[in-house]
Image 1 (tube, rainbow over the protein chains, first blue to last red):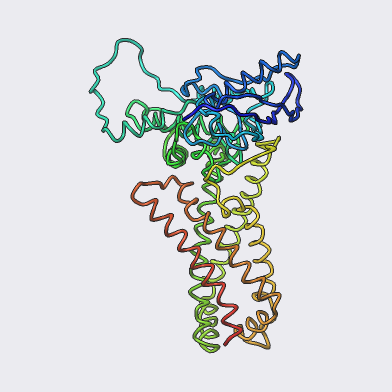
Image 2: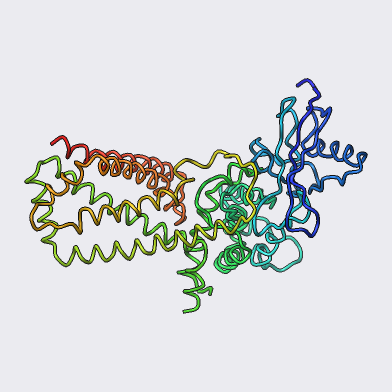
Amino acid sequence: MEEKFINLTLKVWRQKRGEKKGKIETYQAKHISTDASFLEMLDIVNDDLTIAGIEPIAFDHDCREGICGMCGQVVNGYAHGEEKGTTLCQFHMRRFKDGDTIFIEPFRAKAFKVVKDLVVDRSAFDKIIQAGGYITAKAGGAPEANIFPVTYETGELAMNAAECIGCGACVAACPNASAMLFVSAKISHLALLPQGRPEAAKRALAMVRTMDACGFGNCSNERECENSCPKNISITNIARLNREFLAAGVLSTAM
Amino acid sequence: MNWLVRTFSCSVAKKQFMAVTGLAFCCFLTTHLIGNLFVYGGKDAFNAYVEHLHALGILIHVAEAGLIIFALIHIGMAIILYFQNLAARPVRYKKKSNAGGRTLASATMPYTGLFILVFIVVHLVGLKFADHSTTTTFDLTASVLSQPATLVFYIVAMVVVAFHVNHGFWSAFQSFGASHPKYTPIVRGFGILFSVVIGVGFGFIPIALNMI
């Protein structure tokens, strides 16, 4: 696709560090290459803001390859932008037309406090992982690879769930700010494999309880999460979480 | 006992309470619709059906008590979930778009639910608890539904019920974790079919009553 240059109007959420309130500010993004990624566009705008003596827009980013889960903003009402199955860093300006107005807001949830501008604190996800998103295994040399038989299909399902990069787009996109897709992906990739089974019941209860305690909303099967997930995690994982929870709560000895 | 409270107060358990009570209401809607179809048999057939139903005696009271308990659970959980979900996002988006999952039915569940509650109250006051001593159920129903405002209200309510069931049916299966590549498409398809049958089936009865 031929490179073009476009001018845009940005409506960006600005919030000072330590303050509870913020507001939308309007900036002009001038001479933006359509080959630029969304984050590169923000870099260019930040250069202009710095020269003009305005505090640059703070936003999270790291690998810029779509694999780390660090970036994420709500662009025109879509978590990670309108394109399916991509992180914001892999979302390109060729998706916009000259003269477009773009709303840029942070991921919104009670459990994700705004740190500054577009940066949110997603440590609630860490708390959920610490509650049970692991297996207890002896460290040491790699065990014999075929000691646990796993079918190809099951391995694929587990890997699909393990693709979750913990970016929080599911929470941002959910009308209820529910973290069910994230939690279900983390529960699923362990529950599907033999190594994850011994602690499955304890894990399901602990992770769901921690999720609730963090202040996330409840799943109402709106399917906005799977449609916004940059890794296309399916809500079949949420169904798996639901049955893991039911089995753990009613049938297992885990309290 | 502590485990019981801890487990059943979890978000997932609340959804499962919604699911089991919701599916029970789907069963109720089915039997209610089958019963109502006696309207098409005429006045005598319908009144005979009503008498048959009342002859069940204690069974009917048990079923009614069950429905009331289920309704209280369904509505109670709905209220808790609604306010928890509101609280989970204290600052709303200035601009929010639909990523492709949300439907009109799924987005309006709390509101269609509230409308159905209003309808049920009107329906019970207007028909079930109305004075049956001087008239038959058929004549009473026909006279209530001959008023244009009531007629429109009933038909609109049935469309609203259809929307509520449309999202609720498959959602209940999902909440229980009943997801399977073979059966989920069938559940989804059946849910849509069921909601249409409920909407059209109940919706036509007030119209039919005015034509008989």
